Each structure stands twice: as structure tokens, then as C-alpha cells.
Image 1 (tube, rainbow, N blue to C red):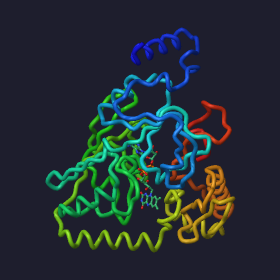
Image 2: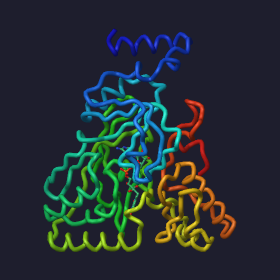
Image 3: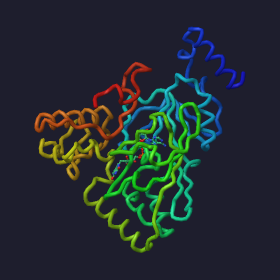
Image 4: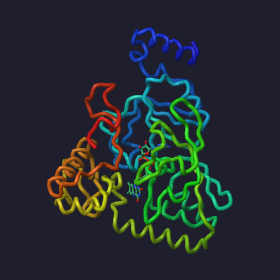
Length: 336
Ligand SMILES: Cc1cc2nc3c(=O)[nH]c(=O)nc-3n(C[C@H](O)[C@H](O)[C@H](O)COP(=O)(O)OP(=O)(O)OC[C@H]3O[C@@H](n4cnc5c(N)ncnc54)[C@H](O)[C@@H]3O)c2cc1C
């Protein structure tokens, strides 16, 4: 039986109310692809925290069309989660149900087009900053300070040192859960503070970013300055997820955490950074549960000290260790 025929059979079984689709192992339900699918790959290897259980299936598409065809043929009940390089991600110890999409080699191309850079969503932000510098394009230096991919930067409206994606984005391309390809102008992305209102099921595949003519030496100097500032103020060589909590209106998360006495606080091998107390660190061998419990403890102490409710900026995905398969797989069901 071909994969397409198998998919149809499964759909009919589900429609007949036999519960057959959900009962079948995922491996037998996935469409054929040109890229790679692995089953049970540990996600701790691909996140900055170095924690996280397995992906039921990990899909690295060969390119945009491969991704679109896969999503179009994938049974509608299979959850899909996209990750970049995991620099803003806490993957729980029980792993992630369904398909985890990771954009690899097929999505890292970059090209300069006049004063704009066209980049695949798998390209590292720092590489986009580098190519812009070499082409004498200013305005994208801030990307050199963010350790994620362009896809993660679009979803998070990543920013640093007075600039963010919203300031430089011309347009983005995305594939939705039904496999349809979209090209959206920046204005339709709904970009706000560390947030894009674009549909949650969209997987960004690329972006067109605007620079402006500049002196390559001055651009390089600005990038060096950003690197030095980051090294001084952030635990950039640690296993961390960057800023843990969003800055509440009119306040800074790190100051609230500091005033609540949380600097250096530990649960197991998870610790609030001494250097920047809005960063949590895996000091070695921490579990995702310890890191999440530490974050919740910080929220409780800040609430008690200041009455302010901190909101997670780090995205938490997956299920706790020992959870029943099929249990909540994203942060929507958990505490803010
Ligand atoms: C040391 C350190 C410093 C940091 N400094 C900054 C900073 O200065 N400014 C800042 O803004 N952030 C900072 N971060 C956080 C992080 O680097 C950014 O949020 C980054 O944009 C995340 O990109 P990523 O590829 O790692 O995405 P991931 O962490 O893998 O994913 C983050 C979110 O983006 C989604 N996502 C990823 N790829 C795609 C895609 N192709 N399509 C749709 N959704 C996608 C994921 O589903 C998830 O919800 C820092 C992190 C660390 C570890």
C-alpha cells in the first residue's frame, strides 16, 4: 500500500469511529518525504538548556515544498511543533507528542538583494548579521546578539540593543498546517513585544529583511560592541534559555527577581543566574522539571514581594516525565 493510500485508510477508519487512527503508531501514519524523519530523537541535544525528552517524530524537511506536501498529507489529528535552535525553549522531560519540525540545511540560504537580505528561516541570526555587514548594510547588527534562527526571531519578534525584527522586516513566508504557502508583508504579522500574532500553526520558512547602506567597518565595530556587552552582562556560555520572563509594563523582570531575593536561587541543578537574574541556568544534569519548578518558585516569590505576576517569555513545550501519552503538549494548558 502506498503512503497516500495508507493515509486514506486511516482517515476512513477514524471517520468510521473505530479509533483506528489514534491507535496506530505514528510511524505508520506519516507521509513520504524527501527530507529525514527520525523517531524518538532526544531533544536535549538541540536545545540550549540541554534538557528535554524525545520527539515522537522529528522531521527535517528538504525544502519548502517538501514541508508543504508533508503537512498537506499529514492526518489532521497529529500535532505539529516547530523548533529552531532551542534558544528560547524549555522542552519537558517526557518529550513532545506528534511531529517536531526542525528546519535544517534546506532553509539556511541567504542572499543580498540591493539593500535587503533574503534569508531562510533556518539561518542563524548571527549569520544574517554577518552577510549584511559584508555587503555594507547597516541596521541588522542587533541580530548578531541573538543566538537563534530567523524562524525563531519571527515568532518571538526577537530584539536587542534598541532594535527588533519588526523594525527591519519587509515580508515573511510561511506554511500553514494544511500545507498552504503564504507570503505576508511585515504589517500583517502582528508583531509586538516578543510576540507575533500570525497564526500559531504557521511555520515560517524565510524572511526578507531591510538594511540601509553603511560603512562595513562601522557596522563591524557595532557588532563587536554588542558582543562585548553581551559577554559582560549575560551568561552566554551557560546552558540557558535567555530571558525567562517578559518585562512587565513599566518594570524590569530582573530587578523584580533581584528584589525578591532570587539571585542564585537553586532547585536541584537549576539555578537563577548570578550574572543576570532573569536567566535560569542548567548547572549540569538539571531536568526540565527542576528548571520549570525554579521558574515557578521565582514567580511565587516575586508575586509575594511585589504583587506583580511574571509571565514566561521562554516557551515551554512537551509533557512532564511519566505523563500519559497524548497529554497536553504545549504551554497553553499550563500556568502563565
Ligand atoms: C544567551 C541567550 C541570549 C538571548 N538574548 C536574546 C535577546 O537579546 N533578544 C531576544 O529577543 N531573544 C534573546 N534570546 C532568546 C532567543 O535567542 C530568541 O527568542 C530567538 O529568536 C529564538 O530562536 P530559536 O531559533 O532558538 O527558536 P526556538 O527557541 O527553537 O523556538 C522559540 C519559539 O519560536 C518558534 N519557532 C522557531 N522556529 C520557527 C519557525 N520556523 N516558524 C514558526 N515558529 C518558529 C518555536 O515554536 C517557539 O515557540 C536569548 C537566548 C539565549 C540563550
